[in-house]
Structure formats: structure tokens, C-alpha cells
Length: 257
Image (cartoon, rainbow, N blue to C red; front, side, top):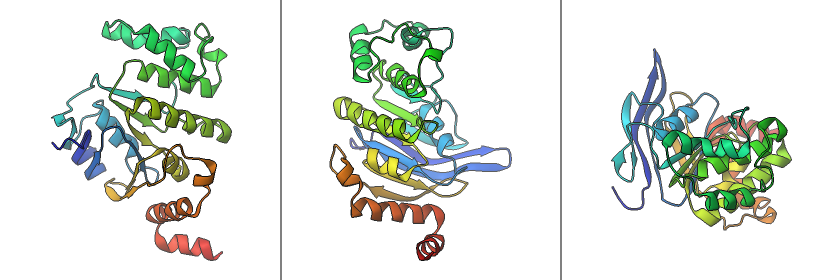
């Protein structure tokens, strides 16, 4: 496996009964990069991400981490879900420490304290989930995932339920954390704008069964300012990706309206 590939999906297929969710899906994720996966609803994005995590086995094909096949949950892969999934009877700190208890590992309290400060949660360690906003809960789930220092972080549309303003804040937070840690991130989203803000590469999947339709390199420098995101290059790239997802003829009809 070439050194420039951190995570590789090779000919992935996933079948549920008579339905193929994925078929012959292949992609590469470079180390220290952010790759977003987009596509129409039901195209297998979450199925693909869970297969990358080792939580779901594939019907065919394989996923490789540093050239080694993933056959189950991997200690070097963190996962952030669509919802924060904090245990309601445990306070914020105890939720963050829970994976260490399960793995019988000693937590690095200094690193956890740094992450809490980085995401603006210092002082909320004793608060319970019902005392935190949705954005704060998702920040806590990111800290929980990063506290184990994974080399790969998989994020399954983690901000989809947040309001637009909070979502933009969370995108900026992910960019800032990535610029500090350079953790390899695979990010599932329905938002093309979110994908372009965060990513080095955007992978577009076909309608079910999901396979890679197109891959776009994102050339914009970081940090990605409002001026960059409002520019014509971003607009043009957004159009091309949406044309892949919705179909060129439908996009042209919309533009003519």
C-alpha cells in the first residue's frame, strides 16, 4: 500500500436481503486530509462510513487502514454519530471517560482538558446532557472521540440537526481542530457547501447502489474565509457537484427558471 493512502476502500459491496446498498465502491483517503462523501439520500453514505469503521462487515470488497484489512472495530478509528449519543445519567466528563472505562485504558486528563478548552466546554464538566444545548452535546461527542487520539475520525453527518448558525460554528471548529491535530477525517454530509468548506476532497456517490461517480479536489487555502466561500470558484464547484447529484438536465432547468 502506497504511503500516501491512509484509508482505502476496495470494491466495497453491501447487500441487505435483495437490495444492494453499495456495489463496487472504491476510494482512497490520504493521511492528514479531510474527505467528504456526498450523494443523494439513500445512496449508501452511512453504510460506507460504518463499513470503514469496522462496525458493519461488507458483503464483498475490503477496507484497509495503513494497508491492513479492517475486520472489526479498530482502536485507531474514532466515530462521531449523527446524534451525540451521550448517556443521560452521566455528566459530560463521565461521558468522555466512558470509552476509557470500556477499554480499561488510563485517560490522558491533560489532553482531555485541552480539548474541552479548545471546544469551549471548560467549566461544563459536571453538567448532564439535558443541561447542554445540541451544539454543546456534539462538541462533547467530538471531544470523546478525539480523547482516544485516533489517527482517523469518521463523522456521520454530525451537524445535520443543528440550526444554521450553530452548524457554521461547528464547521469552523472542525477546521480549527484539524489544523491543530491533522487527524485524517472522513465526513458524511448532505450539504455541498459544508463539504467544500471542510474538505480537501469531495467524493460523490451514485444513487443506490452507491459507487463513486466523481471525485473533486478542493483547492482553496485554509482557513477558509467568508471571502473564499463567497467566491465564484466555490460557486462553480458547488454547481458541478450538484449537477452530478441531481442530474445536468435538472440543474439547467432550474437555472432557466
